[in-house]
Length: 385
Image (cartoon, rainbow, N blue to C red; front, side, top):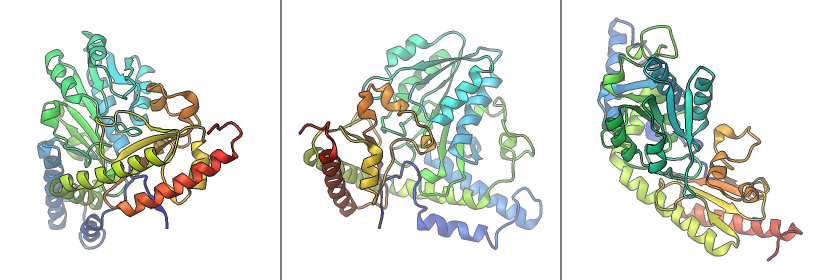
């Protein structure tokens, strides 16, 4: 049976989440925009779900917009604010290790008259706040920096940037897809105006995302999907009620079990790394090992092709980078950014752990990786013991 260590790509749906959704596929199927008794009842359930989701990040219910994915949430936040503020300025700041949902949105904006500054990160995978301050301009309208990186897990100084946002009056968005459910996320404490996250990273189904929009911006942001007037006219399309109920249940579980999850997942990750580093030669962990979320471990196995190791250790589900970039033949832009040796990049694997993983799985996986690495290195004429 496979050992699933790819939770940053997607998580298993929690049984409690699945059970909460079932009635909304069957008996409770009405359209929440309908004014009849069944429609009104479903609207009440959607609004209750909105309250639960909002509480998870210390937001107000009216500041929560339901989307189809984290990618859509990022696109709506970035493009919606950029086009709304284009008369005030066209300069945007981001980092050079953002998820494709963010970086590709900025490429689109660059083709539409905006100027983007891509901040480098230090070797630990974290931006230098002084570099950020130096990049600010009078015409800077938007800053997007992810809260936690999807490949190496490093946590960015969003709170410090949020303090600067209040002083310099730019809009701050953060992609928190890899942060929600792995650390405490409080939009007030962070000082963000917009925040994106996704259901399928927190044990809810694929196909549901969330955008937090500060209530002061709701009448400003421009929609990118047009049609009806759902979600306060910001995101048209009939609400996906079963999935909204599902992500609300996932958020309710986070509210009750976050500390337990962090403790459990951290213990699994730490044991995995401790054994890997002790028992397999020529390996190292990428990124800052302290300022990171609890579930991601990006490890370089020197003198080994990552894909070959994954084939030999096929019982272990893991990744050579972001799942959204799996069709991209280029080396990881994140590992390039933190200046990992170009050869070593091709021997780097992301392992990401979750609520349902066990210590026993870790020990089995390490044994498999140890044996597989040894075989591959014995076959290599270039490897010197």
